Length: 161
Image 1: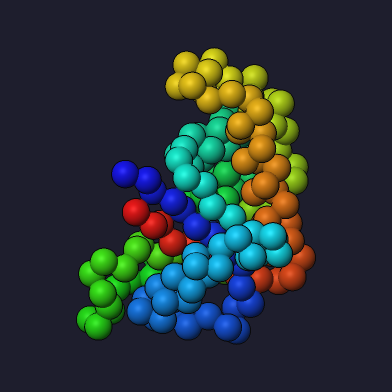
Image 2: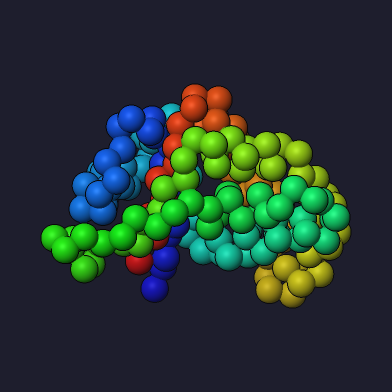
């Protein structure tokens, strides 16, 4: 089974804090994924998002005192609970508000991939991940969050199975 975390930058004023509405919005965005990816307003990963999160967790070992901004790029945001009218097959959804998006963008711009890799490289290599694969995900996320933060957008997140 493939699981795809899917992130979509969107103006906060365009979002309804309603699971049914947000699931439909994210489903439409998923259907237009190619166009939205080309426009730079979406990001997704087929597998290994937990490994990307683990890469960022190594920031704790770098001695930063900034709390846990490393949690924001992948798992950050608040859950949008299923309403009574929600389809039980709808994906889990989260919203990361613009302030969190900006914090994630600052973290991604400031953290050194090379330093993270020096801490995590051996364990990721043992899992079959190459430095280039994780670097590509890091660059994509840094660009995605940077664009979203510059626009003052929120990020909606869905996990498709």
